[in-house]
Image (cartoon, rainbow, N blue to C red; front, side, top):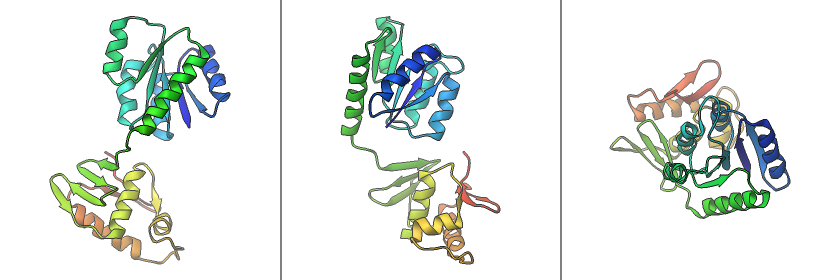
Amino acid sequence: MKVLIVEDDATINNLLKDILLSTEFTPVQAFSGTEAGMVLEMQQISLVILDLMLPGLTGEELLPLIKSKGNIPVLILSAQNSPHKKAALLRSGADDYLEKPFDDEELLARIEVLLRRMRSIPVEKFLRYKDIVLDQEARTVRKAESWLVLTAREFDILELLMSNPRKVFTKSNLYHSIWKDEFLGDDNTVNVHISNLRSKLGEGDYIQTVWGIGFKLNDV
């Protein structure tokens, strides 16, 4: 599991990295709020250790961005010890608050508790993009207030695209992932299913053709 350390003090950041390296956790370092935002876009993070006084985005500004990425626990690690500040951050979405200087064992214990608590929470099986809501468990798709009738292949394509909104899928990628077979290069099956899916999604320009490469969700 990857733990993102967001701390601009290099000494503290490296200390936290060394503490995590002594466990089963994999540390990922960011030295500013802006850098942390980029990491969250590119990597799957299990927990964030967040300082408040950061260059770029502050800890308070980064907190809602982290929470928008899913059920990622956030442990605030700060020298600020105001009860009012702690309460405000916990109400804003932080999951725990530990003051500096900190004890190594207490830090690890709090991380383990947060991750254990996260694993006990049922994972939401919904994917959302613009006005589309895809229920992975019930295999249903709703656009705004209307339910769409998709074939199994169309649903699988949409689910794959919505699960990886920034990834460009080649026809070979899609064919291998959806049909579980080798792509021969001249098969029109993918084009037909993409065309049918676009037609059923209607206005909104949801699926983008990346010419010469493949398909992806259109940028919001």
